[in-house]
Length: 335
Ligand SMILES: [Zn+2]
Ligand SMILES: [Zn+2]
Picture 1 (cartoon, rainbow, N blue to C red):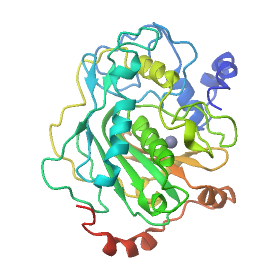
Picture 2 (picture 1 turned 90 degrees about the vertical axis):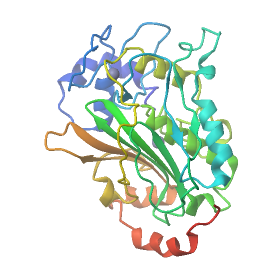
Picture 3 (picture 1 turned 90 degrees about the horizontal axis):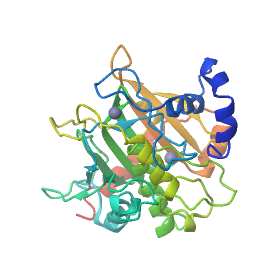
Picture 4 (picture 1 turned 180 degrees about the vertical axis):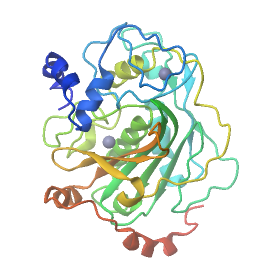
């Protein structure tokens, strides 16, 4: 939907800019607005704009302009599997390949910019620790799975941002649903893994209508995931746009361990700042400093059942207790 309304959105961009509407979608559009070459070589606190040179045409599904800071391309965003069950390894490998440079065209310059970004999986240095906790690691994306409970979500992606720069990310896959016959398929696992990791790279959804035709990207909502398991060229173009400008510093270095976990309930994620029309997706925001320069943002993909509840006007409920009951029986499984 976002993509299809793009042309209209561009035409009324002036109206959008003037508007002080709080809807997340509008903020997102504003941030992604193309305003010419990026002069932001030095760090600023203001959100950076993206650059529109190269083959970009109508891509506009950046997640509010958020991006990893780096001095040059190509660069690596490392995916950690220290807290991921081995049964998910193949899906993470697929996602890792999906978002990596070769897919941007390699020598084929018709697809985005060559060698923009790699998302290698980093091997665990110690025995994997499977638990409810999925702590952030600075400069990296921690990918976890767990039976988080019947709390209504299939997957979440949380990022820390400083200004518009992503400093760390967490992806959680909810095995409570992936262990059921409906969601245990490789198509659902690939779609959700690909989409949540895609969010941690700075992408939003291309389309948020479930019952329309698939766009052949994991950043598209669908009821039948078969053809939506991987990115499409629009995703690569969008990443090319997001990462075209160099930064004067990097947020990809691990300068310190950070141990907090983003949580797995709305109460822990903060304030719901955006909800998609049919209720299937939300974004939550938690301010981490007084000025609002540092924030945690969490993209949530709800199940259809939970979306129906949300549509009825109820706030997302904390159902942590339900999940905790399963915690004991899952400990150290699949080491
Ligand atoms: Zn930047
Ligand atoms: Zn999503």
